Length: 453
Image (tube, rainbow, N blue to C red; front, side):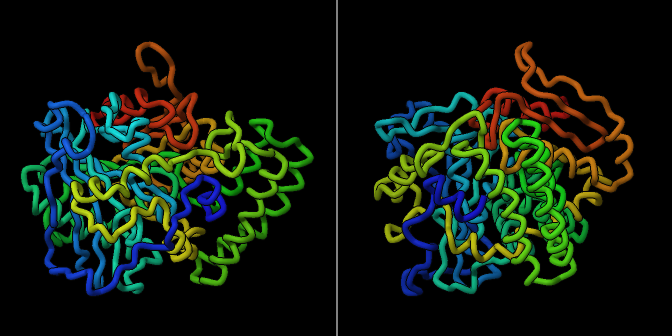
């Protein structure tokens, strides 16, 4: 989640951000995409049938910036072009959605010999799937002007809304498809703001009507005041700390909570102070827990690494791959941008749950799912804030029974639903549910988007 964690995940970039010379960034700023259909023969041996599918990559010149270009992938459904359109956002803040594409729920994975192999549980099997590198400076997205770097969810959501308008203008055949927003981790901030922006755009008839049906957040950070309190609850429950540790660490919470409340009142200094004070809670737990992987406490975090995503970085920085994707040779792939991360730090302690009640009241579906072995954005904190959402169905949700989520006759989780709101605790999974439970995650998406979850 934080800079320390990014560094330990081997995601810290060689360069702070993708800033290019203005002479290398000639942009025609119209509300349109610069897209190419992928010839995957350049991208490894993925089988001849892949040529029959619609796989695209491109750039969108962000119309409300000075020089920013947003990179994206678009994979048409392997099954039916009438399947929902699903956009995926990875968190960070500042981490590329290619992390999910190649390690979680995309059409392909990268083999040991650097060729692409099919992912049998890619979400493109049941949806038309978009991955976006955002905010500007993440992944292959770049700019020649530092002022284009975003600092809050207003800028982030406006850029994404502009992208969607250009996307559906370029692909009008998908305008009437159901549309869903998905993502994980710090996307728990991005997604509620983005969903609200799309919904308000529809209400105000700002452009192309986007058929928003729902949004889903996996192991996200959405309501810091509630979720930071849950660190000790989860850690005690999972026996990472004892009762004495629990009582001692909880003494740090009132100061954390105070700064979060001041941050919500508009005090930017409190937002930064809150980040520091609240992080002490997590740090104290980790000092006791030792070398566990805070994304999956069943595993250790040996050395300075918990996961190694270097294969993806090597693959995407290959010049032949860049050429196939339409990426300028001068642009280095950035897994996680330290500059984007720092630019968004004042946003970290803000409560993004505040816009959710109106979406629920208007019938927009929300799925919150969480792997049970994740510490950093644990299921207890997520469950607590979901139950605290103040909307007309709050009491109904609280009273709703928990039922099994089964796949092929085996329980893969426990779910709770009332009206448009659903919470799902996923068994045998950590922070990245589609990576740890790929079949269950695909089944979850298909059932949810078809109203059968």
